[in-house]
Image (tube, rainbow, N blue to C red; front, top):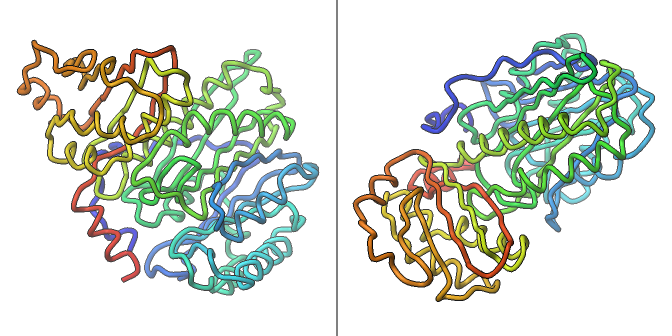
Length: 408
């Protein structure tokens, strides 16, 4: 199905020029896992000494590749490593077949690439509940190993797409001790997107030096402020994975460097917002900011209630500034709120103040804002200092069309 969809109107104009990262190479192949006429498997090889961190879906039905990756984190980093990703089949809810496929793929990668099996990380994305024809992947490993190229990251981003309408990439350069350190990342994701990751795969690479535990802490902390703050449809996938690899090739230790952490946050937020911009059927990017909550956790609950409301999202699709639906979403969240303290704005247009419509509110002004591709919704609960920001998209007929035909 990927490759047949109209490109999202919110897509970037072009895929960014991502520089090579020392210690990382890529290759792709059209293995025919599900799709025909397009690449659907990517292999990244990582130099010896690479530290790998990851965060994953919290789904109780998570897929075999996710469980395998989780079990392998934190091991010895002395040997080379590899990441293999296939699209078209999620290898999820496939019983013992799921782990058998993971084992077969990891063993084959280990043999073909001379990488210890406990340093092979796999991901699968696509249809749930169908056994993965892993032999289509393993029989192509010699080709994947022999065609490795440090500059093939854009091809890797294309190979991992499913219902995505564009490949997603981002890049940051950080100067530490007078030397440039590179961070590059690719992602896929379009539907089944909600906090606790999503049907989202993300791979980030840097040539900085990191101990695994320090990298793990940083990736988990920033993911909570980026990837776990996006939602397309409130559905959490079985396959969500974010892996970050630090090759150490630059010789620069970035574990305690705030500039590196800030750059990584910028990159991860960029990729997260690209996923929302490619939300299935999306025509508008929506930022929901809640302030004045009792605490940040409660602010986040309210923000997600607004962002996940089908009534709010369809109103945005229809360019209708129906702020009553925002009031509804706040009320249904179950988190503390006081009706008579709530203020609501669309962009710079204040529509309601302290529980009542603003007497100066002119709906035509808000309606004009709703025609933009980026919609900002701000809610002040007037109860404390808690804040949260989440990102979502509108809900259109396109979402129904894509998902009604997903397995066709």
